[in-house]
Length: 208
Ligand code: ADP
Ligand code: TYD
Image (cartoon, rainbow, N blue to C red):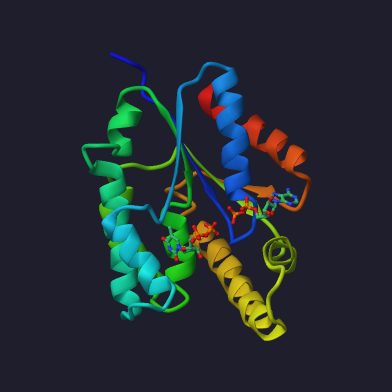
């Protein structure tokens, strides 16, 4: 039987560089002939597209329903028979994921008590826990600078206070989950190359 693949999750506020690092790490692992699969949440499944419709304001919903939809999307991502990641990991593929449970703990707990969000996510986290959660820590101001050209100041201001809240919630969630989850906090404000070197060090520990 194949050795189990690793499950490596990237977390961080919007614009922290997660998708950039997933891309770089995918290439490095492939060069080392480690089979890997990169994916993200929310997914592009029917549940994920409902989430996108809610996030873009086309459909409205209670924050608890949104939190539950993220859980449902996550369960489908883990378990569906076409490209469910549990099966991939069992078959020996290393899975790199842009956002997982900690995104729910941080983002949904702005509107819903964090305990509720953590409880709801046990449905997924009991099935598959990351070998490591890599948190790319970036000052919200810098994250916004990276992502937000061509936007109005007022929007930027609102966005900044939201990201400040979310970053604080991430830190609170890491503290709460200390005994259960492996989290490594990396300085995401360095250059792409420096961050990817830091990521690589941790990934070597995990895969080695
Ligand atoms: P996320 O997936 O976390 O939202 P991205 O990887 O899409 O973040 O990065 C957001 C923007 O910042 C992109 O334009 C990307 O090219 C740029 N970027 C990513 N990492 C860095 C970095 N270390 N330094 C400078 N810019 C970066
Ligand atoms: P996306 O466009 O993929 O942004 P990013 O490139 O920053 O990851 O949208 C993801 C958004 O969904 C992001 O603002 C965070 C939010 N989100 C939650 O609120 N809860 C969750 O559980 C997940 C996975 C994402």
